[in-house]
Amino acid sequence: MHRRKFMKMASTLGTVIPAWALTPAAFSQTNAPYSGKVLINVYAGGGLDQSSWVDPREKDNSLNSYAGVMAAGVAGNIRYAPIANNKSFFEKYHKQCLVINGIHSESNDHGIGLRAHHTGKLASGFPNIAELFASHYGTGLPMPWLNGIGINLSEGLSSGLLPPTGIPSANTLRSMAEPNSASATQHWMKQADIGRLQQARSERMQALKDAQGLPRTQNVVDQFVSASQSRSALARLAQLMPASFDSQTSAHIALICAAAGFTTAVQIGTSGFDTHKDHDVIMASQLPKLTDLVDYIWQKSAALNISDRIFLRIYSEFGRTPLNSNNGKDHLSVGSQVLMEANPTWGNRVFGASGPRHESQKIARNGTVDAVKGVVIKPRHMHVALRQYLKFTTTDPRFDLGVPSNESFDFFDPTAMTGYPNL
Image 1: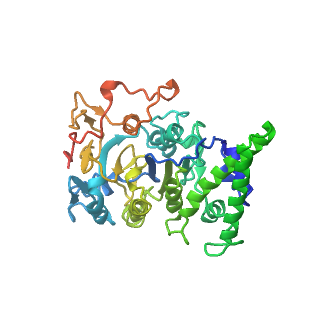
Image 2 (image 1 turned 180 degrees about the vertical axis):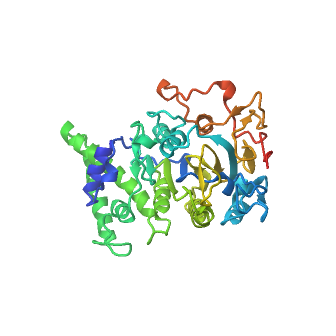
Image 3 (image 1 turned 45 degrees about the vertical axis):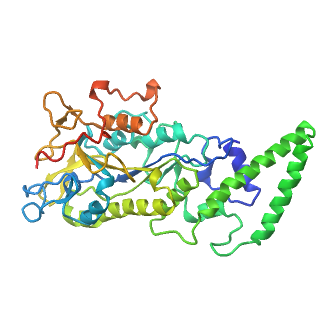
């Protein structure tokens, strides 16, 4: 059943069909909910300072105002800056985290750096990792990948392979899932009456189908049976609708869509990390928003019984320099990412490193710093590894990231570690 038919049949129930639901794709022939991995990209907009996050420097006060005053925090094998709520976050989640340090974005421009981390390439025309993932696992779903960060196409949002759906508002989602609801607690008609009406119609149409009527009649019957399947898909969504949405509304909605089997990938995040001045003040405000969002995703996904399906990536377009004369930090092409799952065999590790002042370093495949045989980690290396780990590799030459096999990293090898050799 195509999405057009899904929308048409859903509208027969009085559902308000929003614009976000009209992107071109086919709805699943079986209407079976998606039950595989859900890729969640959490974007720290503006250029997250690695030294305030997972690659701390605690001795050089030209890098950090906490240097010489507070020691870096330690949770398992992960070190973190002793600011904001990093301590509570990493003490809670370090076993779920793989820190990748020293990633060279090949640019310190916001748009180009972001495109590189979205797609793996500086050049335009490559698909966002969420787009490629969704095209592999989610073609035919109503909302195969959801975008909640509001960036334009030139920054690597989509190559047109499978355009994203904006995360719908709470009211829009409720009107789609529960067309009979005037609100979370009131209905236009008695649900029991609607149920009896639908049951009677379904039984009558099934009887017509069993009678094997004329082809035109049979076609109408088949369409109605398909509409019943669409209603069952909407019913899955309706069962997950809360009386009210959490304060992290966009994340809540996205996770509901994933739990309903409508969605395979999500892009979401928070911004404010472009700290050219007053770095410490801004980080004290903005960094907790990032860690609170990630904490919420894990808490809510557990409540929805899908936490074991989540693969989460925290990323930014680049890192930041030492402190400038305005007590801020400027753009630096070298930064960090954090990868997470619920119970990974590869967690509680640090792979890759930057130099004493966050210079790029060459890393061997086993994680050691090796100036001779090593390779500087770049976004394309990250994307090749993510494609392999999440099993959505592609042979399409248009999407080849150009990474030779002798340069590929298995970031998910639990024996490969770097730690912090340049503190």
